[in-house]
Image (cartoon, rainbow, N blue to C red; front, top):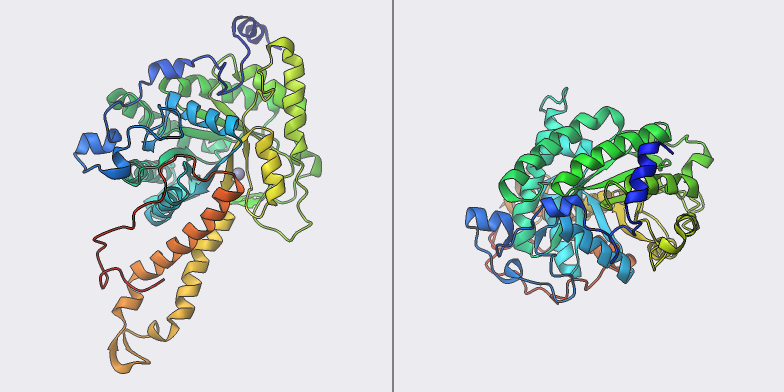
Length: 440
Ligand SMILES: [Zn+2]
């Protein structure tokens, strides 16, 4: 252990991340949560804010958690609530305003918080793949654009949203630097960061370097109330151009000593961090039997660290908050065990990629004969097909199918009825095509 770390540890009270005994992070003092009804966007731009949007306090959540993007102390309170109450929040990779809206609608339907996250590739796609990205400017601009979309509409849907970015390898750090610049400016104007949290994935670097860089970023992020998600050990499989399909087996499982090293290094800086530890999880969906999850690794790490802390261990003996990557296709029993061992977030990408596509696939199958020409269908050679090929129809079919798939994720994660708002009233005054469109 380095001397400076040892001194910091002597000064800092041990604590469970987000637990009741967690010390207030510097970030929290710096980031005064917005107190105006309706959140930042509605208040700043005079957007009408009624019903769910105007909720002052969720019946079942800590008072700091309000509709819209959740940051700073409210974020720590929300994740602490998840850990204490045995649920995890689904984190869905979004690539367009359509996929964000599907997430918001799904969260309101589940009466629960959700995590909306952008990968580097998803951020670039949000900006448009025709835009030059050689200095990551498109990925930075796309993520900021998606953040403003999410901020504006999360309030309207009346759901708490954690706004996050996914895997950021060493060569992509300028992407996060750009987003932190934006959050610091947003913080100067609004008293909170633009994003809730960022992931930094240096799992391919040596552990010391991983910890050094994460510690430096946590210090910067903590100033404005942003949470850091760090990765330890390698998530197998392939996602968004990162191919770990040939990773040696032992690297797919984190060791308790390594997780303890993360705890020792980061906790003195701030408790506002989570650990994506590897326990055999892989990105993507594979045939049953090819994936061997071992959530007990998380349990062993919690016990190991608690033993090291001795009498200072938190009462629940879960000093670390974990993130479950590669959740798609996982067995619900493994998911529930991981939650029991302190997992507060589970990533879902592959399964919602499929559900979005499947919605379009089913739509095309249902209306195939109306989708082949602009004019002419089984009802007549002169009949127009505009209402079938209007992109809103196939995109809405994709959203509806994704919303249904996400309900299953919310259930798997014990994340239903968390806010306490009850059922949503059906939407009124929905505009065309043809006053609401086809039945998809
Ligand atoms: Zn991942």
